[in-house]
Length: 441
Image (cartoon, rainbow, N blue to C red; front, side, top):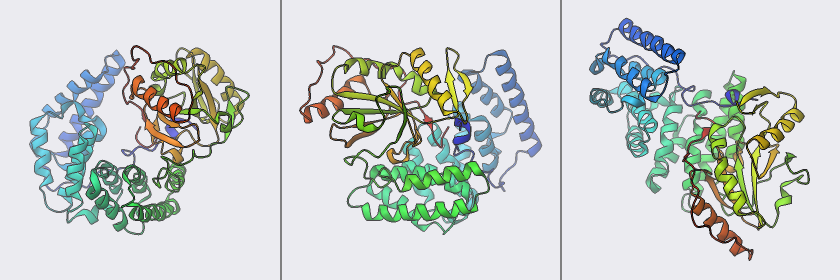
């Protein structure tokens, strides 16, 4: 199955928000502005001039056609969904209108606050998103949101708030526990991100509460699966069930044994199981051929493999059958659906083309491995020579060469194994933290 079919984004989980009683911009004027924007966007694309700068300017021109001070929450939501107004977040009129709508009574104000958390997250201001989400948890109209698909957006926003200390953890956990016995199937798709944030922050003090959250997540997801009428949606929810039951979600991955992974193909024919790497420090890179950020991380991984050549360190790219292989200089998409052997053979060509000097394995488990909490790729984990997971959720290009070698060398010394001499300089990649999400695009 290809990446488009396997990704359910939080945006796709949203329906258009309820209309605003405060709206003053006529629907026909608003629709005309969006239609004109779409026509200009299409022209920019046809001319090869579509980039962040031109789109940002186009968004500014679209706003200039509207009386921003009179836009409704519904209209702002449509603008963000269809236009992604990241390039105009410095617009003072837009920010003022957002603040005004957040003060509206009832569901109108609650939905505006929800939109504001989404905007803050899109712009990278996670602290602001957490602040607004915290206030939204106390909003009297909160109950109206949880009965709709919009609970998914709220759960996504709370993923920032969950890691803001013990108070944030408990408030998010208690919100999840307060949800009705069933939420909409699309709303349930975003439950995973909130639980993942809680899992990263769980402590001995909150472990009992965390177990209650996991039980609630399983209950809600099972109910959502029963009510889902879309096979892709149902498949995603079923993968969420595996996630909630795995060691990452339980907060037991770090320091615990490496989760089982069944090898179905390896670039090294002598590798038939992950047991082949016993006694070595194991660096796992979860990836797929369609993932651009994964490929842009290859120079970092290649450098790491060169540095540890001849030492008891194994670097292994972990992927799974995708039904499509992106090969060659142009990244051509080649259909391999139902033909695993073809996908395996194409991997040999892919590795040669990209000068991959480390092992690649296909596992029965998905490359978005729920046991490791893989929500986006690339995703790196490091396992010590004794088979315990010591680091997880690293980005191969977002963590410096010096930091990665420090982690690995410490594990080598801990096991009484040799370490290579230090290099005189690092080899950071330009791609710091970019990746492809399993439920985020």
